[in-house]
Image (cartoon, rainbow, N blue to C red; front, side, top):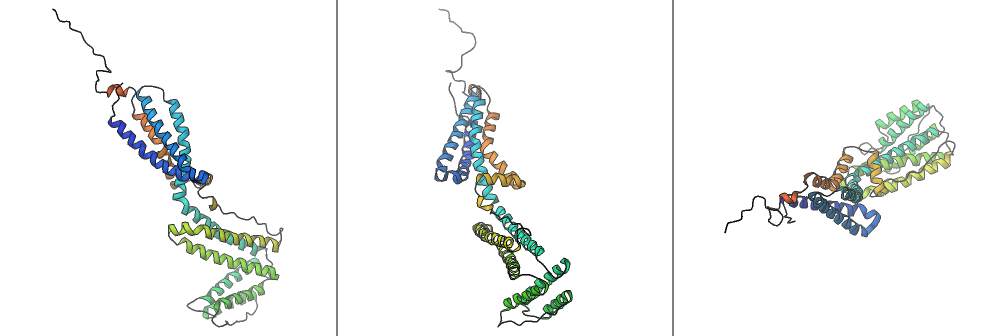
Amino acid sequence: MNKKITPADLFLGILALLLISVSFYQTWLGLQQIFGPASFVIALVLSLLLLFLCWMLRNAKLEGRPTGSLVGIYLFIASFCFIANFNALYTRFMKTDIYTDELRDINKNFTSLENDVESKLSYKYNKVTTQNIEIKKKQLMEQIKDPGNKGIGTRAQSLIRDIEKLTGQKIDLLTPVGNDYEDLSERMGHQIDNMISDLSPEERALKTDINNAALKWNKNIQELLLLSKKEKDEMSQGLIDESLADYNKLGSRSQTVLGNEKIHFEPVVSQTQQVGKIGFAFEHAIKNFGMYQFVVLAGCILLDFVIVIIILLVTTPGGYNRNNGGSVFSNKRSGKTIIPNN
């Protein structure tokens, strides 16, 4: 059979080469977590097999032979590429969002721990009054440190009067050491804590450390979230590890100080350590499925499976016979044979 390269052959060949080339690169990236440097060779072998199977499928379809077994083999091999592609693309496009979600969860964890410990401590006043005093105390501490009006100014004095009404006790107006208003703020806060609580030194120190940690990490996380995408990707994991270490330390300390009967703490492990791993990519996509996840899924299907669908749809059985230009070597002549008379 005389086979000529047709425009359809050329188009399908270029399309297959482009799609599978992109798939090869993404497969290489997606398999690095498992195979390391060997992922390049594995991705290359898988991609060459896919190209070869595309050629075999088109030939089989043109010649009218069954294609079921070839399609099955193609789908089996392409599924490995699909998994690796999804891991690479999902990690690339969703990495920043995954880090952002983890950082916000850490903020929530600190707030939850702070509230949980507060609710387990013993106070001289009822819960509502204690909460109101705590709110006023935090406002006072921030006001004392306010760069525009440092010290115990008019607003700070107003807050002190509000706290005195709630407690029924007189608050001493402390003075700063030099210009250290941060220290003054802390000392005023400690004075109010001592007025409203029946806490042991360990409980008082725990409460202070948790409050300070919650403020510190909330500020650091908010500042990080304002950075560019590249900077967030580079710096997030370090901040996550450091803040979670502090959170777990304070949580374990809370359980030790307050006792197991008052508070139960489970250490938190960073989920972002799993970023780049195949299992995590699929798990995160399923739990948070939305438009971005759909786009990544559709892109991976396009890279690995659409070419074989196109080949099966556009290739007509016996196409070689119609496109061989009427070769005298492949077609028999029809019609009557005239034998001249001698």
